[in-house]
Amino acid sequence: MGSKAKKRVVLPTRPAPPTVEQILEDVRGAPSDDPVFAALALEDSLGLSGGAEDTEAQREQLYQQSRAYVAMNQRLQQAGDRLKQKCEELWRAGEELERDVSQVKQVALPGAMAASLG
Image 1 (spheres, rainbow, N blue to C red):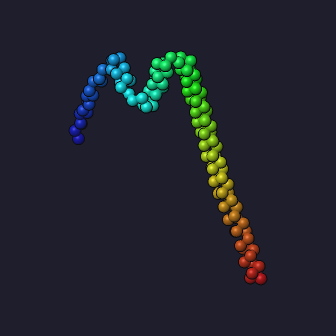
Image 2: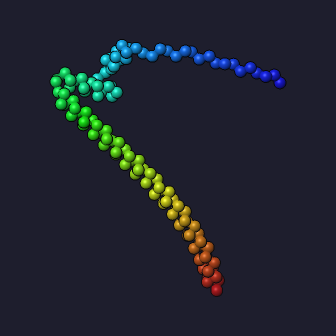
Image 3: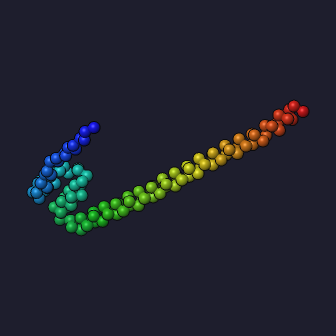
């Protein structure tokens, strides 16, 4: 058997990172409803109306909403974990109940048969 030479795959060189001007052009060209840039658009619109206090209030509101979202997400994950645990407990209890029922049937059936024969 001959040995096969491994072929090296030559990867193309990485492209150069975008310049600051290119990044700014992309940000400016984003639609106002783009979720990634919605916060920036909100700051820009508030900045034009001269509401520096409004901007701070909006930031605080967004921060509090974010905190509430994270807290709710954690509570939901904990509830999901508890539900999974309870489901496993119910499943185990069901199996145990089935074993107990089959044991009762095994004990009760021979006695019932003897009584019907006698």
